[in-house]
Length: 107
Image 1: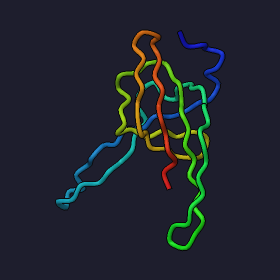
Image 2: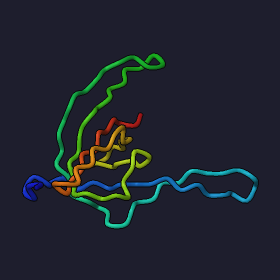
Image 3: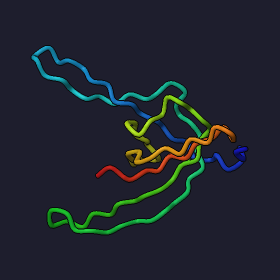
């Protein structure tokens, strides 16, 4: 069972929607799932520094433990504070009614 006291970080889960622009092209838009913001336990993993296109890029990886929501998949994104993260994996724990989202920062 998830400890509600540890769910102290507000996050927004966004899902992609493909919209026809009327000119024969499709545009991706991100919209918040219903029930947002959700509350999560923030579990830091690591930060990576690397050089990309001649610039120093710092990538953060983390886990977020939330209450179970079957509408969340690895195709969704997470907004935590001012940063956007892609979901790299979902660990669904049906028995304890929670799930862990493995996330990496979107650069």
